[in-house]
Image 1 (cartoon, rainbow, N blue to C red):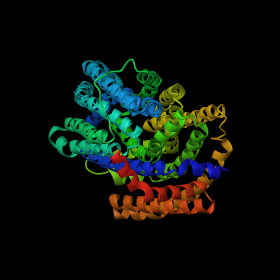
Image 2 (image 1 turned 90 degrees about the vertical axis):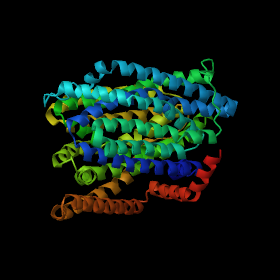
Image 3 (image 1 turned 120 degrees about the horizontal axis):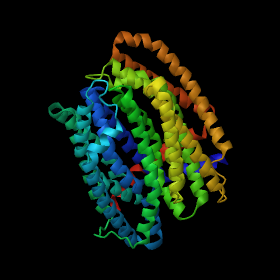
Image 4 (image 1 turned 45 degrees about the vertical axis):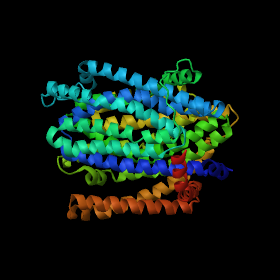
Length: 549
């Protein structure tokens, strides 16, 4: 029975093709994100000026996340799907135009307010920045300047984020998958070219250039799917009011997520001038598997979940969430273990060059090892949250996110003094595990109230047992590989040694994991093979179909 449910959840061609396209986009984006991190590390290492850049980045990112991010992730796509289904495309485009106009206007107003208040707000985000070196006033002033430059980016993202939501709602994933690539290329341009003359200011202008590319690439696709824009705010439309109603709780939830990032930065500023940069680099590396596994699969599945919710097909919705969760865990659990085991050679291989020295590597690894423990939880939260959004319930995941935020703050405060940035990473991991557990338990009860017997503990437990068994065997092999190659790698030099460890550990570990999964008859492995087969057969068809809509 479990196998049949999983096949039903994971085998549809539309989801497979979309997941393949989105996953390819995420992988490409994450690879460019790696290059971006490499370029930034090479140019700045973990120096205090880069810490000012990371502090400055928080305010523009907050402006975008609280507006366009909220509409895209939770409120807009389910309402848009329901309006198109029940009232037709004309009303759907009217809704899309109105929400796009509202989000763009609100983003401009909030960015203008942030520009004026930056000298008051930015120094509060990291009050310890520069205290160690006696440069507090200089670095805070620099952070304010960079904030004001980068506030141009949410003006672009306010529009492009909504375009992504509209295109995903129309099952078009190609242009939204390309957009983050251009964003990363803009930042790389800033780090490699502009920073040579303008220092960290060049990096900030790279963010702005990347945001313009993120917007421009999606405009042609918008017309290709038949978007008909109207200069109206549409306050009288029931759909617009529903989007705004659903956005309210989600804004609070996204604010909680942003508070988590600010809290880490706040406490890190008291550890050392380099700690802010180090913890940010560690977090970015941890997000690589989270993005490729959790975000890619969840993003591709969400329009389907939204449609099932709109049709009130709760059995189908529960099956889709259940199977997708098990697939994410099947991929994320070994990724989590592998990153813990290979954290040091991974950081050395990716970042240790130029201004990023061995001391910087040690700082980043301290945080990364602890962050990586919860990769599976961060990835699984993505699909759990979207399960609630498909039910047009944004309040529950918000309440759970706030609980996670409070837990994160408490653990940060308790662990930063004895453990430094490793303690801050531990707080994030504890909060992610707790948030996932609460989301799973609550969503299971919510679906059970509708007569849907999915997300069962026994089914998930059996799946996790198979995955954990394969992961344990993989871990043993990787430990042996690291022990054997560690000394030889040191003799070969830092870069070659790190490359040998990552390549041998990654390939050897993956091979053993897949072989063991096959031996224990993992249903998730068979489902993954079916997905790959469906993607290979249908991806070109899905792309051409999406472009022709």
